[in-house]
Image (tube, rainbow over all chains, first blue to last red; front, side, top):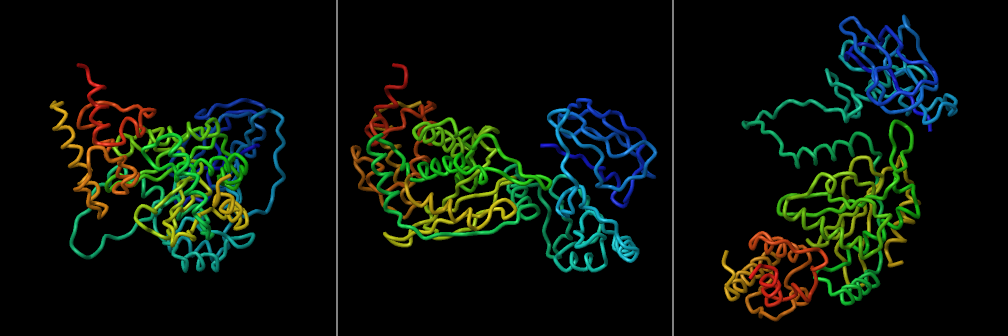
Length: 367
Length: 88
């Protein structure tokens, strides 16, 4: 599917940049990182690089033009002749994210030092009411940079005595995860009650047959989730810049508490595994986590996740969505022998409550 | 590294008792032949910790396919498995 690339934000207060040069032609193939154009503001000149590989389908600007930050510069496609979608008025798309402010709004933005790209517009133009709504919902004026990464919010240090300390890599990773959930996902939660006995019986039989040391209950449920990820691709996708990104593999994320550290371990390419292979692979990854020796490929890349707090008799929890995923299952301790809760945190930009309810019902019993 | 069987068993037993205590369970009466997953004293997380501790303490690697009751199911089984894994 064609993708577009927009005018970058060079300096936080600039609404427009001047196009100095366009270094590609329609039909030309570019690699990620190739310089495709040069733009200039009052303060600096920067090279615009291609954000991904692809054929230039259309160039929407020209040298000498003054162009708004956030406007579309190029369309890229996997082939030369991909059709560019018709423009829509969808205000959630990146291309239309920066609406031209009214005169009063422009004055307010300048006075409060707010980047207009941070304020959603309710209509064709960004208004004072839009800014006031954004502020009332916690938007903070000031020099916060907007980037393609999760926005880093600035705050004052507490007034109580103390000192700032660097986060460990694991803690920084958790912060990034939580920040993505907060800033990108439209998170929601759903749960169903179910009878845990069929799963417990299936796990006991499997453990006896294979003489397992560890209970296979959670791995079997996680494997069933992986199967559902293949059967229902929507739950194995995410939203990127207003478009759905459909993952090719089903990489299952599985939470492991190792001492004071919480890891999201990842078993990759589960679509190529049977139950025994998955359980073996998950066992290996869990041991690596317990030893605090997770290699990077086992600590990243989850596309669909499973979390359980049953070990601590937690009967309900609402986990945070791992970055760029649409669903994480929340398994909990049974309330009694006949009733347990199976929940899910999900990204409402991708999934509806109906979608998630169907998954939970399918997961609540062995296939 | 001490590969005396009795001392290995004692170390494993102490670790089992320690892990069980963290789960509010008392494993002080456990025998060398009790099947650890069947005792209910350790959950899967604690068994994982036991295995990771076992590998680190005796500097050997347990293959995933060897993670079964026959090889690691009891204190005796763990001891025998360790000794068979080490060069004579």
